[in-house]
Amino acid sequence: MRRATRRQLLVGATAAAGAGAVLLPGAPAWGLSSPGILSMQAAVRLEQTLAVAYGSLAGRPALDRELRDLFGLLADHENQHAAALLALVEYLGGGPPPVPTLVEAEQAVPGLVAAGDRRSALGLAEQLENAEVFGFYTAQQTLDDVKLAEISAAVMCSDAQHLVLVRQARGEDPIPSAFETGKESG
Amino acid sequence: MVSGDRRGDGISRRRILLAATAAAGGVLLDGCSSKPAKPAPNSEVNGADADLLNEVFMLENMAVAAYAHVAGSLTGRARALAQTIGHQEVQHALTLAPAIHELGGQPTPSRSDYGFPALADGPAALAFVGRIENTLIAAYIDVVPKITNSVARALAASIVTNEAQHLALVTQARGLPPTPVAIVRGEA
Image (cartoon, rainbow over all chains, first blue to last red; front, side, top):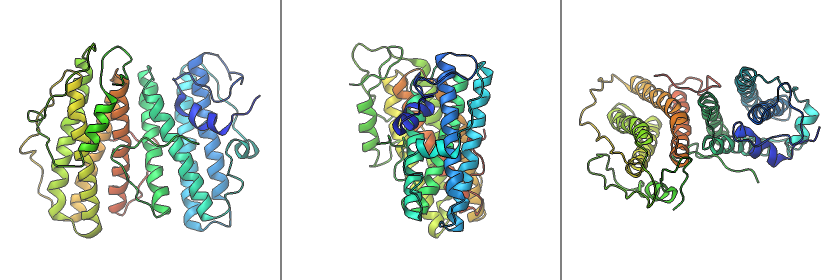
């Protein structure tokens, strides 16, 4: 299976669910195959990958307790996002993608391995959350399925709240704009 | 003009951005007082989308009034937070109004009195605006998937994310965990 580049992972996938973009080009469909299911599975895979990444950060002794707790919360939420999206995949007749390993998450999220201090870890988290919000925000403009649009909007709102927590931890203005769209990952 | 239209109805992304920028100025939330934006040439209006945006526009006006209502009950950081959020609600309303016009609708004027309850203290005030934010989020989550114009949907999506952030901050100001759920749907 080909691995996704970071850009494909964060921009193409997220909620490309429904938009037709696919996180893992050339990847097999896990179960029934259709463009919608494939992109949904890609979104599930993305959320699972971020859950593994945050779980990894939450377990790093070099980070203070408060920060590890934050990453633990984010990991838990990403897992719940994955579960909610997976429920839709299964509703559409698709199967669950395999849960990524830590090695796979490290390969998919550049910067994860090196995020050994507060600054780099929070910088990475802000980048990831911005990319997630941007992905869902972009996908919202093309999603035709009401159920899918609804759940992806609810997940997008959660990621927007994550941005608040991460920005606060970085000492930034938590709501710098009245219109939150996230940012495309570079 | 950039039509984000998935069905041929027009709404100018540039106009939305201009309105958002202009929103930094004064408050003009009376839909009847707003200058109608000229629909884009050769575009079709979409009354259903206008109605959907108007639903949340009315709630935005209510939110603006709600944050003004709680100001006297709050002090310090909580008051500053309410002022910041209240200003962002104004920006939402000022941006939605021209969008509704462009879709062929007429924004419903804000009410002079929403019948808000008297608030005993700061915690009551924060709980009150927390309910307002939950109401807003629930309304947007309901409305966003139904909007057919992609630019209008994008606008609504960019606002509901901000409302979710407001809810987190208000909840945090109440001394509660700011992000208690992973699937944020609000509460009607």
